[in-house]
Amino acid sequence: MASESLTVTDNRTGKTYEIPIKNGAIKATDLFQIKTNEEDGLVTYDPGFMNTASCQSKITYIDGDKGILRYRGYPIEQLAEKSSYLETAYLVLFGELPSQSQLAEWTHNITYHSIIHENIKKLIDGFHHDAHPMGILVSTVGALSTFYPDGKKIFDAKSRRDQTYRLISKMPTLAAFAYRHSLGQPYSYPDNDLSYPGNFLNMLFKMTEIKYKPHPVLEKAVDVLFILHADHEQNCSTNAMRSVGSSQVDPYSSVAAAAAALYGPLHGGANEAVLRMLMAIGSKANVPEFVKKVKGGEGRLMGFGHRVYKNYDPRAKIIKEIADQVFEVKGRNPLLDIALELERIALQDDYFIKRKLYPNVDFYSGLIYQSMGLPMDMFPVLFAIPRTSGWIAQWEEMLTDPDQKLARPKQIYLGAETRDYVPIDKRK
Image (cartoon, rainbow, N blue to C red; front, side, top):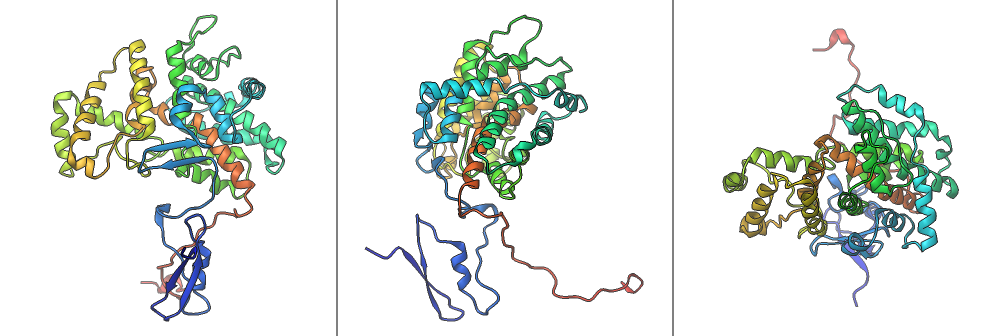
């Protein structure tokens, strides 16, 4: 059996180096011994972390070529069918499925931390009526650090647990209040008699009724969507959570940074881009012409393809079934026929097959949320709520990993050499 190492010859000097391989990776710092002088060792250049592992993790496993997604070893298909979001969040955070008593205690603590301080409500009131809900969420979750200064005790396990309760329970409240603010409607406060997704629907949609009763199909749909979005390995927002968290700041500030990353259209806004594409296509009859333009480089096929998945996104299969159930309750989304025709053509076209462009989770999630009456501005907010459990799990794993240090990447400097200062009256 070959040695678990990599032999590298530097053709600049003729020297040969042996670099250890562990878990299919080499340490980037081991490359620094490869140098032509005592000052400058070799570094790797990898914009966007295309082939660089920034951590070791036990939380989420993805095999993009095979279309596999697992949380702590459990297939996403089994969790979506049999679990609930709060049970899945417990699994993601603590590594094992909870016992009945553990789940009861966990659910109780999440339920009874869902109320927010009245001054946070005043902060939301201060935003303009058309402020983007995600901007409000980023601001308010960051502001929570001033309400819970004990959150700074990040190496105290009990404090971390307290902040976990608060963040997972308050995110739906902040999100729903941001939504109600955008409509100019009074806030609907949490109802501790309801489930996690049921209570979120209550805070979104309750009007004059004394007791809001969520439709079981919609309640289940939200629960499954939350499960599908609980974690997804080292994506942009998770990397932000870990990177900012490496400074040892409180978790509220780190979650605000992660949510800000999710705000971007290339990350949390992808399902909105799908809807805008479907609306631009206009009708099922226009799909062939749209596909022709995409193949000719005149447009983009949104909701297809993924940075990780080179096969059918396993979450997309689950979400497609949920969509059918929601449409039975809320009526068929008129954009669905366009989406189905687009999927049918793309999955049969060699152009897309060769490029491994398959539907991802964003292709159908926006249709579901729109059918439930939610505007596109709310889509990244709906993403942030369930991802909070994954962010916190990744943050805690980072904190307790002895290999992790303050995030501070190298750069390759291409600027000017040393120059002397020129007084302003002598500059050209």
